Length: 385
Ligand SMILES: Nc1ncnc2c1ncn2[C@@H]1O[C@H](COP(=O)(O)OP(=O)(O)OP(=O)(O)O)[C@@H](O)[C@H]1O
Ligand SMILES: [Mg+2]
Image (tube, rainbow, N blue to C red):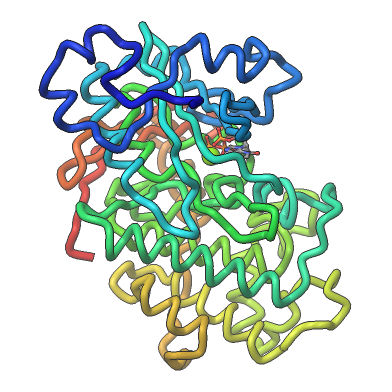
């Protein structure tokens, strides 16, 4: 066996703590030694990525299975017990469209997560990665991906108890298995990170474009913030491009802005990826684009729930496009903010919040690269939406 039931191995303090034993039934514990072997000593050759949480390595476990081994950064010093409790909650959550967590390692200061390895990378490295991938996403595959992601998110929002707001829905967190089935990764992770640590990575260009303004700027965290991000992702999948691209002419740089513009001119179909060479169902594509506009409306209340989104995507519910109102554009808010800040010269682009418990205040910290100034807000978690 490649992994060990919780009580059988590692972490002497955890082993001696009956509270931990009781709460942890779903987590397999791996020894540091085992993960070192699996990844060839966490070698550069085995490194497959790096994000806001730390580095990710591909490894082969003792049972022969491949795993994605995510080494959380050194700043992550959450206590062993808290960490294991959160991990246990995450490990319990299983769905076809969610990445499976195999287990973790908590030896000394190490906090390492072991996930099912997905063969086909993320949407960020493939479909919206600017043509660097050999995978061709035909229209049917794109539809399956949209519906799959929507189902995974609806599950987190509406079926898991306590419900989970992902907080970081974006192309790099949508992984693809060998059949291109989408799996949402990193759900539940925001809770693992101490409040003083950045966990919404803006080092990856484009992250900011996924954030609902009321969350990024006002700190208001609800499921509707995820639904906004999903709307942006949906646009990316249909158009085959990243939500922001500074290489394009100014009027095309922001995908959501462009979508609204084309929608108003009744030319939405012009947003569909030209690399499909016209091989797509235009009516369905426009419907998907309208759903993304419903999801990104300025008022969180007007955005549909994820279960309604699933129904609309699958044709079980009509899309009422007479009701679509103007999207909330983070660029508008940022302009305003930066301008306001410049006036007062007392400023910000790092958002910090404090407290980490779910269902109460929650935390977010995100550095905006375009300027160096900082300010603080508190994110209120609001379950009513
Ligand atoms: N389960 C997995 N299977 C295969 N590759 C993975 C897996 N998990 C992560 N990766 C790879 O590692 C990369 C880094 O992932 P990570 O989640 O650390 O960062 P990110 O998603 O790019 O950014 P962020 O930290 O903001 O979420 C991913 O883009 C993906 O290529
Ligand atoms: Mg990720």
